[in-house]
Image 1: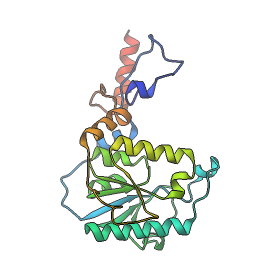
Image 2: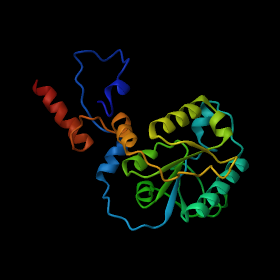
Image 3: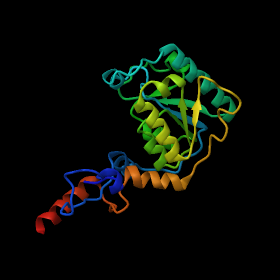
Image 4: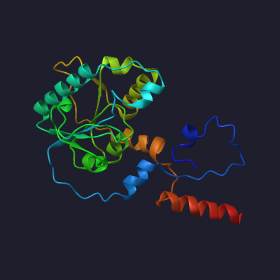
Length: 231
């Protein structure tokens, strides 16, 4: 089962040889996008922040990553949000990470509205997507939204995983890192830049195999297994 370009998905896999049957598929995020009813939206002058539970996520404890100072992180976020709202005229809403335990209008986000389980809807209805390196960025790519990658020095250097994710995302999407712990007049220039060629490349590399048929994930699996048995 190969949900993206083969050279990225199965390269170096010792279990794959010339006898292996390749079934081109797509990822779960693409499946959700495929089943999502995309209505033409009226501009709501909103930006969405894809929360990653960055300070409290248990994954970082398990890999012994350096802790991020909670107060410094949220202070930088609030300052960045205020600067973006002032520059763009957009209001920022928070798409809460599934494991996060924030209150509605949590003061850590400057009392901005926080929503659960509505990420793809919020991305659809936004004019700008703000994120660190959340996998939910996939929805912004699929919906062709401009993406601003927000980072602090502590986040970038916390663990090699973070550094690699930030570097890979900016390269793949043709965007830049925006350091929110050292804001200046250029930090939020070109916020609405979108490279649709790179977005299409990102989809084929990471979200949908170029040869996948336009069927649901399990229809593709089922038909491929039936075909395999017949041979």
